[in-house]
Image (cartoon, rainbow, N blue to C red; front, top):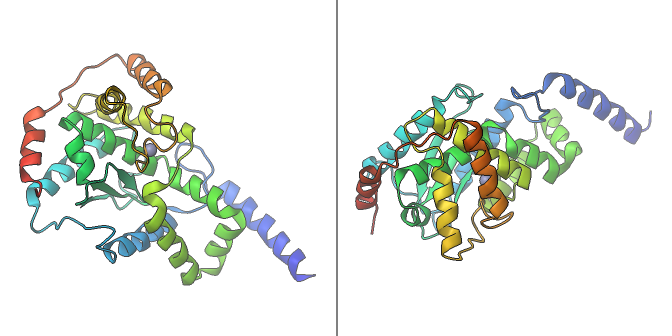
Length: 271
Ligand SMILES: [Zn+2]
């Protein structure tokens, strides 16, 4: 058999096997396994830690109050019945001390929040809304699907078949550089918004926390080009409509904004 032919046959076989074996818990087809996603996330996380100029990480040891705030909030969100991969992924939050309005998530559960966004938001429900949106990108395995689109099935299969470290490194470095600006499709943004509400319904936080953020941006005529949230369509009116539909379908519950908790957080951030 010619080499290219052999490769095609192998590809079809492997792809077939994946179609049967790699269904995500929500029934969608994904290419990377849970372990692959965690491995990629870890590599990208190392690349981020190794670049303090681009990613000045707020030290955990010196900012216990801030990290306890976020760890506690994350634990509450992950306790939601809607979460598929609570015990499978390696969930964590890292704060980046930079005046950028952004938050982003790596495959496998590592998430990042910029102090610029924390200060722009106005209460704990808004922070929970954004965090829950990032959790949804991870738990709904959006970056897996997005990576498949960006790198192609051939490349990702060769990565899985060859177990080639240099290719992992290449993707990891791309992730570290570009994840903050990664454009999820509009459908994924809608889904992440929807699940942000669904997760928060299982907490005391106001489930529409994320809407407060969109409304604030809209009122100020702001667009945040770097923000993964808004990279598809900044403060899209349809997005707010979509949020309200999901909220109404789920009983129009109004929760707490936890203003004092948020004020205390701001007091503990570096000036
Ligand atoms: Zn998003």
